[in-house]
Image (cartoon, rainbow, N blue to C red; front, side, top):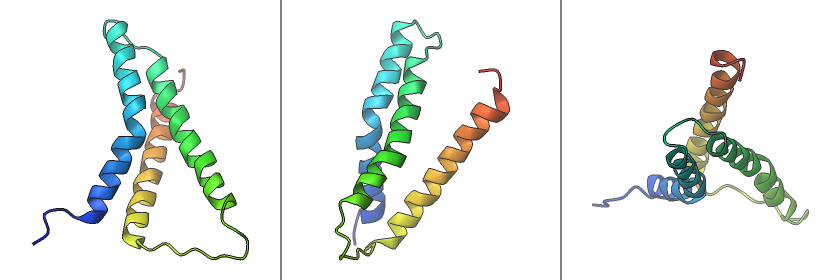
Length: 103
């Protein structure tokens, strides 16, 4: 009986590995400001997410030779990642545009 679902383990490791620096920076920023709101943490997280979405995906597309075709081997992991990424970006847009329009 397997103890770990490989898809969940892979997605968890990727999420922790790619977001840990931003989360730690946000925690340090909020502690240094004595738990008052700072702009460094949220800006770093949003900037990193935008970079990951745009630049890294573009680089991955560009490095594949034009005569090769790549197929996604693990479609369930791809679907889970795509859905949760879109939900996160829609939630961020809702929070920024809908609930705090003057920020």
